[in-house]
Image (cartoon, rainbow, N blue to C red; front, side, top):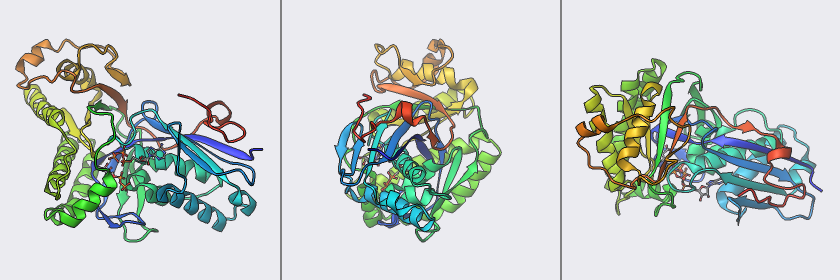
Length: 386
Ligand SMILES: Nc1ncnc2c1ncn2[C@@H]1O[C@H](COP(=O)(O)OP(=O)(O)OP(=O)(O)O)[C@@H](O)[C@H]1O
Ligand SMILES: C[C@@](O)(CCOP(=O)(O)OP(=O)(O)O)CC(=O)O
């Protein structure tokens, strides 16, 4: 009954210079360029299967095992755009006319400020693109699903060029995934439940009400140039400073929005204090942070400091009960942080961080064995992989 199917994974990306604000809400044209770091899919990813089914069978979409509305404007826009481009490129129209089934799962919290929409729409775009044989740039298709998704179409460091039309608002790679192999990330899950105000609504409110927003938009081009140079030169200090400052500015803009957007919480603020104090104690800027639209902290450092950073974070913020605190890429060894902790002027918050995910720089979407890992059976029905 099924005619063809594709299964693949797509990565999360975390912005170092944030996207926040749209000039065009439907086409998702942002107010400014943004620049991100693609995380390894060995640790965090969205997995998506897309397949055509026989005429007369209903098209369907499942997210994390739950059926969703395929008529949702964003997912529908992605399906329609992939089909439109495939048609122009000469794909057989009988294939494009068949009903489609899509199933996706995230192996990390959904809608909690950990860029699930980025990985999810990049996976959907790449899977549909492969299903229909689309060639060329997929980033502008992923962008109409969720702006930040365009950056998950490539690995390494990626810049989303704002552009001014649906055609020229695309993501391009600034440096490949093997450019800076020593970088390590520790994604600290402070809260895994969906946030109160989603990014789309939050940025709409900011555009309408924040008097500080024009100054931020004007400051972004210089920041993009400076961070691109820092990345090219593998200058950790410059990259970390620019990233932390941009995260802080983004959250200042959120507070300047009316009514205000409180994405970070007390634990997030304590983590920020900790990173600055840790750098002070170490006598050098060796760790940085950035926060998306939620309280979860994305900490980063280089490989030589990763084990110590993970141990100190665990000592200060874990509940002390969870034995498997760091998931994903684990530290090679536990470091005795007691001496260091004596010098750090930050009060612990026990249980403030539920768990952390260790990871590094990674590549763009990758096809996986459809027969083995498909989320749909041969009839296009959901396979329970929970
Ligand atoms: N794997 C997926 N496939 C398709 N759509 C997804 C997937 N994962 C998430 N989404 C969509 O993205 C929405 C969540 O987006 P939202 O921007 O609110 O959160 P987030 O992406 O986790 O956080 P942020 O963008 O602030 O980092 C979900 O409600 C769903 O509509
Ligand atoms: C804070 C951010 O993570 C905002 C991401 O916003 P989304 O891409 O989720 O928003 P929509 O385009 O409305 O879907 C910053 C960033 O990733 O650049």
